[in-house]
Image (cartoon, rainbow, N blue to C red):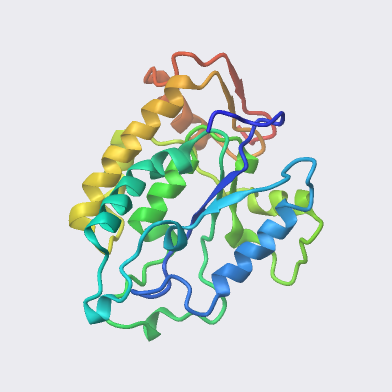
Length: 257
């Protein structure tokens, strides 16, 4: 994971998105089409990104094969699933991985049509999505955390890497990092399908990722994120806590501070 390329990022991406139904995250392939649209643009510059492996929880972690009929993961699969969950903080928070965030529902998706028991909350109200977004907001440069919900309808990004990054990092697309205590407090307002088990887990994982990423950071790139004084104050609170003892360089240009 530390073997970054000459441009300072890894050929690794992680997808953050809300599941659309209880048993399948993307039954019509609508989210897959949106992700493919973004990946086509990202990979249009092989001199920058020659390849990119994407972590997608549904395909990357063992899921229950057929929950409605009682077909669940085997013990071995369950152990691997839990091991995978323990690695999520590194995947999403690492300073040099990409995070692709689908912050909006695809066209045609209606929460009121979903089966009982489905989490119908929007991206910013879901516990796991909030956690993944918070991980991605720790120490990454702006262009490595992309809000795909800001892609323009009808815009073809096929060979337009720069336009995709510009659109997906525009003002409001990235919050400043949160102290673990602030993260834990805000997490209480978010919804989980399995909150009893997941909420304490993500609190632990967030705190570990926060300490790891800030503890080793020597340079932080928070430029061109549309931040104002409120965001600067939030960042100052994090840095004043002593979270980044090795920090040497902080970039904040092209903001509105």
